Length: 202
Image 1 (cartoon, one colour):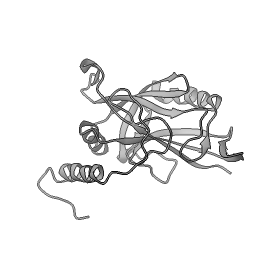
Image 2 (cartoon, one colour):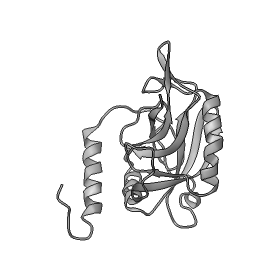
Image 3 (tube, one colour):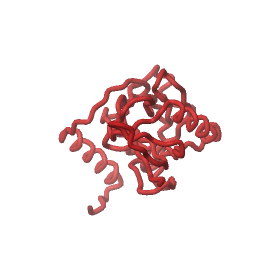
Image 4 (cartoon, helix red, strand yellow):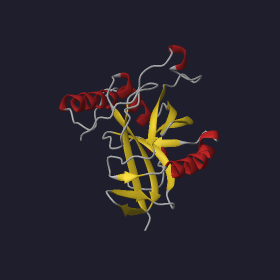
């Protein structure tokens, strides 16, 4: 039976060349690893490279149509909610068994929070969202041929081996929790929400 499959990996953003760090609209651009094929990920699941290649080829229709959108945090849904959209994937390519991506951070409410996290070097996860079924194969759950990639979202907790995206590049798996990092995240989000002089009550 098909279910929502979510795989997350750390996405650390570092600036590329300064001239490439923003697009023609002035929006931040980041790049790094979106997914990894042929390995057991942090959820104990395995995706073949053939399966990812098929889904990336289909997903390129969204990239080429400028609608490869994703959200900040995963919803419990297969639908992309436009009011939570934070970014748009502009380019996807392969580097060995890594699916690489270049991502534009949009000037939406969620995108502005994401941009602030990147600007303050706060590690975030990039996470694929898809629908598919699983089959136990030895020590791993193999993702089956009915898998359908929906999008990539940015989230707080990484689970997939190999990435913390940088404002254009590097990988660094990290599954530890740092209370100081999360305090800083909360401080940044509060500053954004209270920028107009009034703060919501949580």
